[in-house]
Length: 506
Image 1 (cartoon, rainbow, N blue to C red):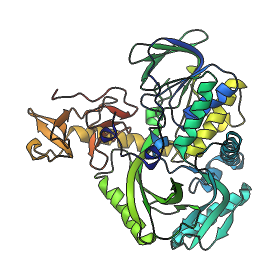
Image 2: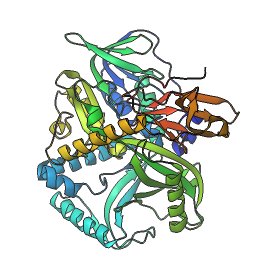
Image 3: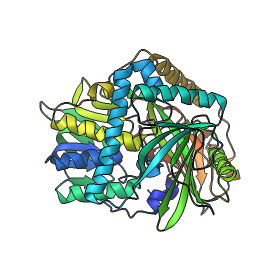
Image 4: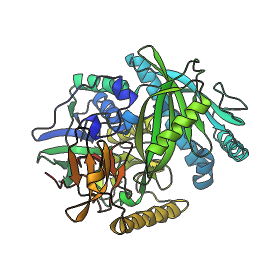
């Protein structure tokens, strides 16, 4: 799949050389099969390989091409305003475990980079959660009390190194940032040297069980037999009775990369208010950049995505002197009903299938935390944090409220998509334009590429039958129900869908 058929290429993809791995071409047996080649899957496979396990990793596309390749790549325990919420809903013990597990992941990443001498732009940075309004400052002060209760090192400051108009900010020292794809490339090389097997362009579609093993079937008819299977694929590629499509929300956010005439003053920044604004600096090939992110919405429901990029461009121009944008891209994250990731056995029916998802936009620290937890479960049979992150938990508050809200939203879009959809005349499409059109008497999706060729597809999502919306900025078809995304030719970019959209003009 080329970049014109998927999301806009990120700065990470542009600045790293991808080493291609072959697709699976025969049946295979291993100790552990890891499905998913992002930060969670690759780091888990690395840890298990280091422990002497016979491991194979599989990805439906290319390693790191998904959210890992479209992140802002912050490694921090400061996950927006969350610790006050965790204390209120889960109590001090579990809130403390969340902090401790994320801090352990950050420390592990730092130590691994030093030990392995990984050249991945790793730098220690202070993290700032800043407020520009009275209400935002009030929320920061509540979060500060949570930090104090949980012994989280911090400072409450009234200015930031980068001028953002902040009334106040919570500063957490000694956090970090890095180049995620260079980090993953090193781990892939190391575990490949130690015998791990890596396969790309291999779509896993189902599992079956024997007494002591799990068999995974690929779309090409090959089988993967393993003692344990790890699903690190955002939406699990198999549900196992966990009803994850009803307990996960797909959220989309945007990034603009550019440069300024003034030196970056350091630090990583996130606004306490909406719309979210995230900033960090980086240096690639001796050139300095600033990443400006934010403007999130539920996947498939953002209307014209171009307006989100435009909002970030406007913010950068107002905030950063002589900012010149050079690149832009978007990312997709999953959020659980209680804002804590699902990490551990898929369900009681699938004890040998483990999963990790729902990082709520903090997948770099969260993914490494998941890798530590999953490897502990497989190697030692237990983990200090397994109860906090277990996927089959269900807290009465706020889980029930969020569960009902999300599923009402899905039903609304499922019904609305079948009724009144505005359509355009297919003959009016210009090169580079897509829309819902009337084609042979029926509604369809059409895109005219730069060569003037038409690509017409059935917009009905192959996951649950919702109607996909056209994403003007990324040139994709996005499902508003569960976040599946397709290229303009109908190929799957992001699950839970496994099958492409039907092509109507071949």
